[in-house]
Amino acid sequence: MLLTNEQKAILDGEKGETLAKVMKTLVMYGDAFEAEKLVPITSQYNHLVTSFGLKVMSPVYDLMQTILDAGVASGQKFSVDPRPLDKNVPANFLQNFVFNKFMYAKQDFYEQQLEKLGLMDKNAFSCTCYMDEVGNKPKKGDVLSWAESSAVVYANSVLGARCNRNSGIIDIMGSIVGYVPYFGLLTDEGRRATWIVRVKTTKKPEAQLLGSAIGMKVMEDVPYIYGLSDYIGTELDDATCAYLKDFGAATASNGAVGLYHIDGLTPEAKEQGEALIAEGAKEYIIDDAELARVQAEYPVIWKNPDAKPKLCFIGCPHLSLEQLKTWTDNIEAALKESGASKVAIPTVLTAAPGVLEVFNKTEYAARLKATGVITSYICPLMYMNNPLCKKMPVITSSNKLRTYTSARYYTDAQILEAITKGGK
Image 1 (spheres, one colour):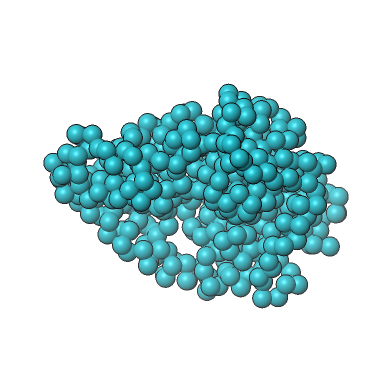
Image 2 (spheres, rainbow, N blue to C red):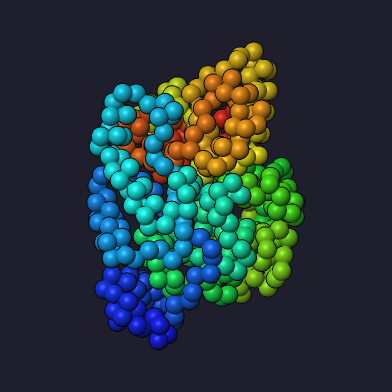
């Protein structure tokens, strides 16, 4: 790897032993991917994927403390993934005991470390840091050092920023020295599509289901998608961005997609069109039958497949303000149709603290609360990532949550029916 004089000086310890170790880590990371050089991070803020104070993650806290003790601050302020706990989310006594005394006993301590290191503000905890209400939205062409997969794919695809799917801790390492290795999705060649996907469904495909199908097919490759803009338009408005947020999260979790192009819609596809498609690209056609096949093959890993759901999570990744409003309208209408006043299954809608703050000032908040639905800033994945919750029959419209936990996936329409009619 070719390093500049400044980068060599840091590596040689001219700015201290701790910074030299951070630089060495990044150089070794880049070497593993045959990066030719390091390039400057140009985004205003960073985003960290490690947000949870798991007791077993003591090496992370030790590392953070070493950095703090050395007086090495992050070169950028940063946001962080969602908190794992919220007292408002349903949990029994034993779950609360395990969460607070064993699993996430270091949460307060770790958050104090994050604040000292450069946390944007005390509520900058969300996987959708790019929401206007959170304030960490990169510009087109910005070079990032992120690791959160759903945020990386959104930043690359919808915003036109440049970021690899980095691992946790590498994200803060890049921010500390101000550089990241130049390879993969940072390069023009790495952003070219090696798959052509043709959407030929008879109606607008479910975002989470379409993303799942594409992710499992192309894995870590870059797809160029035809036919989707026929359903979601050619402008990146609130509704389209919310769709792409959920779609991208499914491609990233059910596969390992870090970038997709949608013909006539996403920034690079609008600018370069088919020039983005690499020679010899493979083809994948998605119709109604293919989506039905994909959903039917999801495994059901509940202890009792016929159990009545005990909890429903909506919002992984976190919901947008408009999605919260839309869910409020839809839940009210479905309850009225079924002759009920409150949801039949405990239901949690999750969103960033900043989004919830704005939502709670609207008339929608009281209306949603009246239906019995809870709003939370929690990370549903972290809530369920324990032996007690693994046994719970939880339903969700998130393919990311389905992939990483025992939660069972249903489309938005199926979820709506289940929570308002009890699955009848």
